[in-house]
Structures are given as structure tokens and as C-alpha cells.
Image 1 (cartoon, one colour):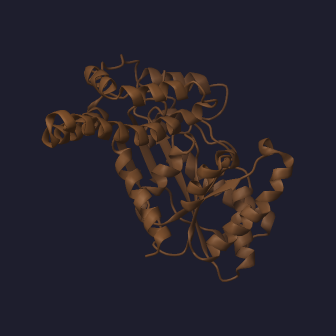
Image 2: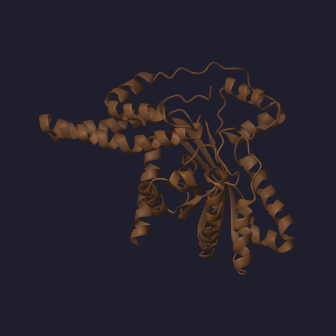
Length: 350
């Protein structure tokens, strides 16, 4: 195992463990649909910025490569770290028309990744949105799939739609559902149809699956009303099949009073014990321009600052009370966060 592989697996393990201190429950379905070998393209809905690929890759044994928006790569140090974890920039019109030409080189890298029978994560909606529905898919992901098939006549690429659903992506802690869909044989679609028709078939198959793998409220005049009814009923959005059935039948539960979180005092104890990380978050949160990035920044700050702060405080306690007291404090600090994360009440969005 090479150094890069060790680094990647170490980071993935760290993410998998740290998410347990950040999310109340992660439901994962359909992992058996992921081929153990061969080229795979994961087509994922995109409600919650960089949190989405974290939940997918931490629950898949395959080493993944990712296409993410280019503006995340602006800082040189960030660019190096992201590149070491197989993240690649994809350029949009917002990044400047001149930058779009860079996508040709990115597509070539994707072709090479699939040729090597590795995996690629793509967000086919073309952008992130917290709306609880699947937007029309762009054809960019089909260009990558069929481009790789054209260049490599013996290559097979399995396309797997993945639905991600959050109970409330802005709150802590939330619940998450990751649902890997049924495998789609892209070679068969490509071989039996002219390219234009093949593109539409693949887009439609992925879109149809995503609408079942995550909560999908049709984007029509009734969208806001339907969402309000679901929120007032405080439904568990991570019970995707059940919620989609409510929507299809237009049959919603009665309004319920949101339960009281009796563990809220424990939350304030954690804040008092983590005052500097909390202040860092409060200051940083004011500069977040897009609501979809709130959860990403909150997780990033927590996962870095909390362990550092608890360790520094443990060092200080060791100076005055010895290593046993310091060790108890260090473990207890993490235990309190874990207990609050797993036992507190989560509500739907306001």
C-alpha cells in the first residue's frame, strides 16, 4: 500500500469516526449494489455542499474520485490537500467563460480514471440546492460516461444513482439517509442507441431513481404547501419511502407539536467547555454566503478545533492536577459530545 493510499484511507477513517460525533444517525441502504471491481460512476443529488461526498465515500469501500466546484480550490494549501484526497475542480460559467476550457483537461482525467476501472463521484444536477426535490439533470455526466466508452471499446462503466436525505441540514445533530440505487449498465445503453437518445435514456434512468432514493416534492405550485405540511407534522425525512408515499397520495399526518429537547442543558455545558471553538464558529458563520455551506463549515471547524481545544485544556489540567485527572477530562469531553449527538431530539426545518 502506497503513501497516498495510506493517507486517503486514514482520512476516510477519521471522517467516518468524526461523523458519529456530528450526526445523530446515518442510515445506509443498497451498499450491495456497489461493484467490488470495475469502473463506477456515482451520480448523487447535492443538497448539502461538501458534506454529501463525505457521507458517500465514508460508506463505500471503493476509493473515490470527485468533481467539485472550482471556487473551493482558490487557496493553494486547500488545493493541495483536496487534490491529495482525489478531488478535482469542475468549472462553471460563474468562474468565468475563459475557465470553462479547463474542463476539457478535467474530462480527460475522468476518462483516465474510468479507464483504470476506478470510481468517480459526480453531482449531475450541476449545483447544490436544499430544495427537497430532484432538479433537471445536466448532460455533463453523460458526456464523461459516453466519452470514456468511446475511447475504450472494451470498457464497462456501472452508473449508480445515490440519494442523500437530511432531516435538517442546518441543525446539529441531524439524521442522514444514504441510499445507493440499482446499477445501470451504461455500455448497453450506449451500444443499443444513437448517442443523443442514449444521453436522454441515461439521464432519465438516473433521474427516476434519484426521485425514489431521496425525498422528492414535485417543483410545482404545491411545493411550498407540501413542504409546510411535512414540516408541521415533524416527519422523519430519512424515512424516504414512507415520506414519498405521503407526497404521492397527498395524505399527510396531522400537525404535531415539536418535542422538547430535554438534553438542551447538556448542550450548554458542552458550549461552556468548548467556548473558543464556539466563538470561532460564530465569527466564521457570519461570512458564509450560501446556506448550503453552513453544515460544511460547521463540521470542518468542529472536527479540527474541538480535539485541539480539549487537548490543550487537558495539558493545562495535567500541570495542576496530574495526568489522571487530565485524561478523565479529555475522555469525558468527547463522551458528552457523543451522548448529546446520539440522544438529543432532532426536528424538521422551520
